[in-house]
Length: 378
Image (cartoon, rainbow, N blue to C red):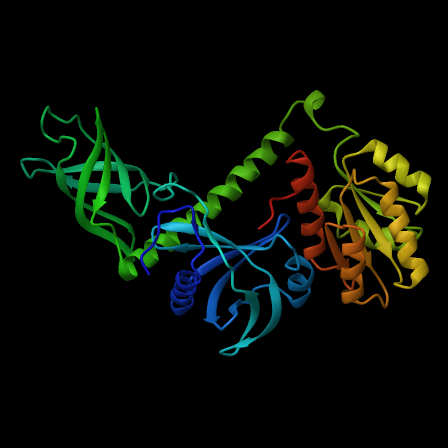
């Protein structure tokens, strides 16, 4: 399939061709919700589903990916795409645990430029030619699948290189990504050159190149988010979040549950417990900047009514997570979560897995920005 430059692809045949291509070569992808993300690889395309490798536990998949805002991000051609999807089930493909995802009906360009530019390239040097066929050296400033920006290692003489010249370029990005091609000079000022690959990479080279750029883009997003957290943590005392900083509030009368959660959730921020009463909910809504974790011990009519009443008392001012314990089964918990418009549900097993702290970090990050404490989600 010819890679498009439009911001969206809606043609069903073109979408199937794209997914057949990425499944055929086992392309990398990211599964993303507003709160968590997982790295995976494409495995197989069926009539109405695309199978990807299950790189997370069944529990993480069940509670982390059952989101109405689940998206997949992946490289294809010279661009990165984002497509809405839904978890349909789990299974096995070629002996590997897999997730069956709904085949999207639209693919949106994730970064609507010719291609994403990698700025963090390390000490990378390229060789390029002048009009007189001299070989010159340039330090790579940034690079994408469509072009490269160089800083020449010496002053360029007048007329030595000009805009619109077609020159030769050689650069080894990684041992598997070596470019030895023609390039058109699109920009020239002092020692800075902006070059466009002519022709652009294709075939297996493009697949490897696009995957490398995609991974660098994901790393850059994590670094930028982590830098925001670090800057917030390094702020002067008077600028740091005070009592109004986002807190995880357990709405429960069970002190033993609070004690059980406090250790595993210490990185998710402040944890405190309030009784399941209307007055406590009104106070919580008035205080703001909290994640309300409702303890669900049963799914009978009285239990469901109590949770609905408590959620309504918040007036939609705070995000709500339903935490099921004991014999509370997942399907019923999801149904109740939809009724009270919870942002997530989670069924607590005998052991508190590492996924729950990540979820409790991600929800305040989404709703209140990056001021809350906690590590960057990966």
